Length: 309
Image 1 (cartoon, rainbow, N blue to C red):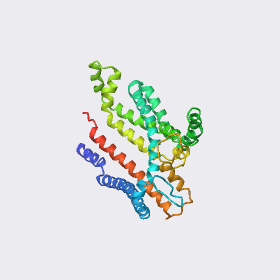
Image 2: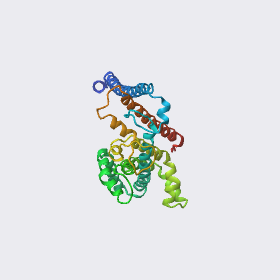
Image 3: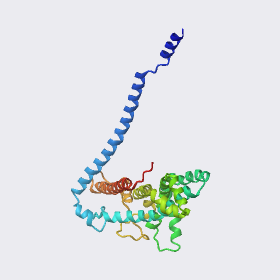
Image 4: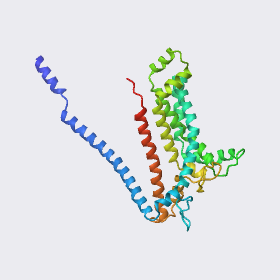
């Protein structure tokens, strides 16, 4: 009787290996399809940029594109000096990172090293709420609040790069703070304890031990924030203006690459025209800038990443 019961019991609970294999194959197939869709979409975007950009350079010499000192694609005597747009983009992004880097890094150190567990659980989600605010709200905040405030003591125009850069810095601060805090928090506790055992103060431990150990993560956070700032559209369109001007004067109106894309995409640009192709040339330039930043970030992380057992 016992052996029969055991035999029946074993037969009752025997797993269905074929069904499990079929389910695993279905799941793998679904995931592979999703991965192929994302890869195909990326390839399609890149190929579109490449083909349209080559078509643009068939009509505009690349030398003029890189050396002209003005950006007037809609004028009868059109000029296509891309560095006019690049200088404005670098100006607003530079101001933004000057705001976001100290604020974000200090917030990350405070949350990781000084705030208690309960305070950290409350403050970090509150900080990350800033990342969920629509950028058009930031843009109107820069235009209607920050710019009038700056005009009280600075000779800024109604549209200017300074207010756009300041608000852009506020927008990317949560990225720097959150990712840097994760990198700092991941530093092993034994490194802190070793520094304290040698007589280091908390400040000395943070500066000399924790920050160097988390450097690769912090740099990645900063580069990601810079890429986000370079590609931002609504804030610079609403607050920085649409006046293509070569230079780095933050008090005047400028036009960034994304602002030009918005201006030229409002619906009055004929498809296939030279101005239409200019959109892709500017988009390709923006793509190459962010791609360069991402490659540098990947190299830096692999080169300086600290590994702990």
